[in-house]
Amino acid sequence: MNESGQGRHLAYGAAMGVQVHLSKTVRLTPELQFVRDQDPARHATMSRAALSFDVQPAKMLQLDVQATAGLNRDTPDVEVGFGVTRKF
Image (tube, rainbow, N blue to C red):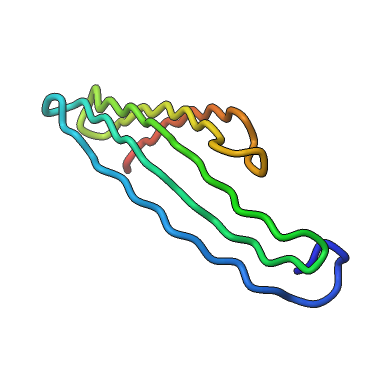
């Protein structure tokens, strides 16, 4: 949906990441993402770099933390996320 609330426009992007297993239960994942938004009101290209750290202390439990940094002025400066996954 356009910023005006009417109509549609093209947005596209690409992401890449590499997962590094530091041990059987610990993973580190650096990522890059690029998104182009063709909104008629304001075109923007957003670019981000992220680093995720995952720990699996038990077979059915995983803990995650991710820090994301914007690489240009069209992207939020810093974002931090936390997660807990419980398999059942």
